[in-house]
Length: 301
Length: 298
Image (cartoon, rainbow over all chains, first blue to last red; front, side, top):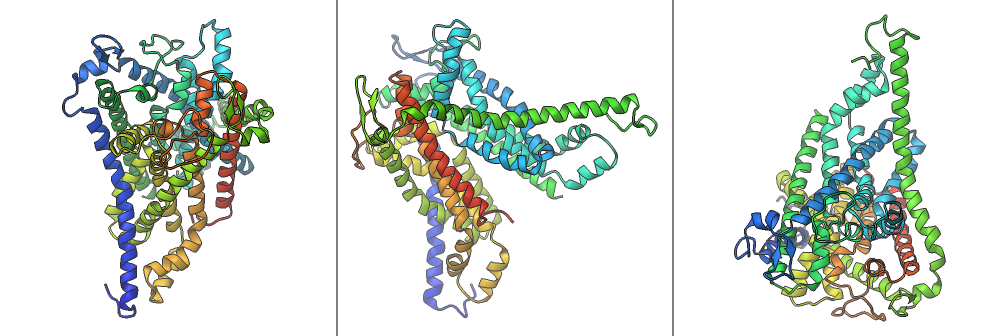
């Protein structure tokens, strides 16, 4: 450090601020590590886990009250998969469409209305979505489909689609916007239609960004709790159709944790499901990160 | 590939079959995109509109300041303990998370010299932001409630919310500091002041709007999430009154209980409306602050 002008006390106070801010950073970030380690520890997946992973994931049913109790999460991850696939199947086409609309078609004033509207959608809490789905869809499904209770995977997927929509839409709008303007102008200069430019130029160039949008939506959908807890029906049977009730992983944890004896086999099973979910979501995040960096490097080149 | 308008000069003549077809396709496509945009606009407006129309008659002054009453509990009375609990949880979370996030953002934006270190740490922070809220709930339950023996309490829930707010606040701080023009830094440092003086007197004055917007977003997010406080802080019923070692009611968990136990949908509509009205006010102010400049990029 060169410090001819600074007095000693000033220099040291600056160094202290630097050290303090470093400590603050370290404290906050270390909780990620602590969380991973602690959830793993509570699950006893590393050692002393009551069953093997194949039994846990596929073979065993979730029957904690049976003798002997069994804690398989097959029904839960199947439900998670179904609900997530359904929600992304709806949210991705619509979200990418909205992204394309915002970046290419919409006039300025429409963009200025849409942006806050999407932020509004993203700002509604999950529990309110769950409630909204309950009073609108669940009640009507009971009459439309003649169901004894309206909750089912289809409704959970529909509401989840609305929840991840703003994230997919704004991320893909960003991806389309970051395609170089020159390319657009060049293509239009050749006299092709807007559809052609979108399909052949924008989609190709924005592809990594679109993947990031999909991955972001996926991570959101996998981890969403309250809405699926309220809408999917919360039964431990393995679902066979979209109109069946189910219990996604997150709903399983939210339902069972409150009434579980600490460090029991069930408690371990819940934390094991949590750990699996955590690792999957973090893996998706790594993917987003890689895509984003590749994307940024390419658009700068 | 007959969807291209450019084939050969002769095929691209106005009025030719190819030309007409591609123009038609183009119009159809544009109409589809307008439709997508329309749905994107319709969804939030209709959801909020529905909740306002159905919920407005359930909200009154009494509803806001009274505690839940009736049998089963919650069919009458109000939601004051839940409002109070949510606000207390968010305040504790902010009080804990903000200094850490401010320091962390400051370090990444101003002090950290190694690009590589900054990148990796920023990635870890983004991971923290991506962790599903139920996992925060699990961790909070196992670590704070059981391991550290806090019990289901205001302090345990507040700390979990702090953990959720930390990455949002840090990213907001870092980004709004980074968006301050480098010329200010060079000018300041060339005058021989310390980094901290520069941060305090110049950079934070330029960046505070973005930071405040981040605070509002983080608090809004924390107030609305039920999963993390479900096992760490929330209780079914309380008459109000706060204590760090005592559990509280919160708005989202109260709404969840009202619906899942089918207690009272009128009360649920009122609770939902109070919750989103509060959050919208928060978010609107964040948007306004960003609109006013401050932390905006460029």
